[in-house]
Length: 340
Image (cartoon, rainbow, N blue to C red; front, side, top):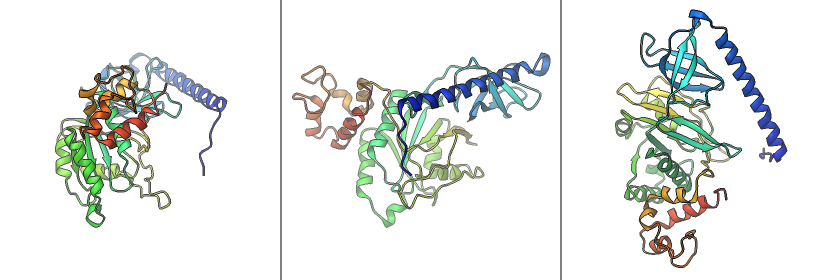
């Protein structure tokens, strides 16, 4: 079924209904907290948001007698929206739940615009962005480059992971391997592995140890399969590729945090086929392409857009082979999507 285009007024009405529902949910949370009087709420203690379910979130106690326990908690109405990976202060109740009373400062946050163009955090306190792609569904360098720009802007270290590498045995893809070489030359770390056959998983485990990582990538590239291979017993649902579109089907519906026994955490985020960067500036986009940096500020014109202007240092670098024509094409495509 074709996606229905909504008018501005329809979008406004939908947003108004959603805001009213959120306000009602906040009032319910306030009433729930107010009903817990006297000694019914325990003392304040630190916790970690490990999953998000609309109004409520799952909080793992990180110290004290309850350390390791997971409680389904409400948040106080005066708190901002919480995401998986947030560190919080919470108080347990006497019914195996609790109330979040404060949000601790985020060290990093990964954000993307929602369907209305509003910037929305999707994970907090992440220091590794694991960009997963595969020979199938068909990967696109532009989407990979969007993730890389987002990682650079958020000061999160990216790691490129090509899953399903076993498919290359029967269907060689020299172009895809060339992409990996190109990214490696730029200084980005890359891994080839196969969740299905177990090849390369030890290398990925070593990369994930003692870090808080988030998996991103198209639906169908095998993020859930990788987690099942890395954390036996989680049994995340795995979706097959659509026969009609060749694209992946969504199996993850909420971001969830997992602990590795040897150390480190992993946040699995809902699969997304697009990663908009409409919220960033032109200068931030240029800085996101790390190989552009030595040439910035050396164009003939100060307001150079690096498209076709004479004396453009970036275009001269492309001609000299110092910047990839594919990456330059990605830059132009992303630039065309930025808000004016």
